[in-house]
Image (cartoon, rainbow over all chains, first blue to last red):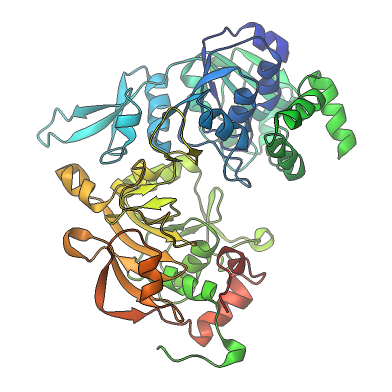
Length: 284
Length: 261
């Protein structure tokens, strides 16, 4: 089996400006934040981000890496509205292509299955199709002839996900309550990268996961694995750690003035990931 | 029952809202009751603990649980089934669900917005949540709304963007709208349904201590009225004990809707 271990910088080197990048997790839960921070520090621009959005989206908007967000929501969960994203949207700096949560699932699934679209009733009657011209209508070819919404395949140039544990080849398990749609993000992408809390020998994966049913990511779905304990901080990565609510509040407050953002950025973004992790450990 | 209970046991406005939410689920049977928010969650738990025992409810994360407690029950969680987000969409699309959502703007037919305020989508005046699951929810399973701050800014003639689908738009799409089922709106002031002409919003009851005129003044559009407009019922002693001692013992409900007295 191939050794796919790499660093955050190795992953960034695989990305290019203008790419469409999918980010796993949900809201402020199990986000690959060390990779997000690395993009935030990079020179990449004009990215399109596809995400069940949380601070991944907010941070990349605040750092000016993004010009379009494909999403059903952007929320910090315990802080319902993401303040950095709000600022970016209200100033017109960032475009939102709106999706229904379920349609987004179908778009990723269609890409993963290599079909052009999947049908749904979600979107009928709402303003979704008007605000998102990529969505379309399709008529059932069967006797019912029902008109449905077609969720187009959401093909991704790259996907970034954070899992609890993996082996060096990219077999990986989620140990928290929900896989969310990480498997679909990986399935929809040309280049696929994981960060994980720890890498273990393949023979230990089942023991760590406790059941095969948590081993939901297999190595055909993964090109690179970054081992980085705490990578999802300050989002939750149960059972290793919950959301760092105090830190999230500081992050949110940094949207209040340009000066506050400059200070937050100097302290928590324009530093190496190793320094970030040791600083936050000292803080706790 | 419109008489005022004894002072010591007098229910708060929040507790009246809890009962009004619970009543939204009456008759629903064995479906997923998915009330989103503090008072809605307490109301759903109350319905199940009393008159609607077959309801299925979540822990707010990835499990369906039997607990009466609405929050903080990790120590004695009784899990009925695993319900990650992917399974949640299976339930939504099957129709076996009644969701209660918040809303930032709602029009007379129940068209709903919590995505953005302002008509320029490229740079909205106020960016809110997004479309979330509102389009899929409203077109495929039963939906009600809870608004803790009934005001003319929420109840508007036209919403800036339609995230949740109202009765007029559902009718306009014909067959595709056949699973649309918008039920009620519960606010800090009153209960409304869509029993007016052509499914317009109709004032059904005002909460104890609220005048119809207050509701009218806090609503930007012409509100149809039931004849007569009733007074929302108080919780009975058993319900009050459940709310206060079991479902929400720390009183989170009072932060959602402060008591006017």
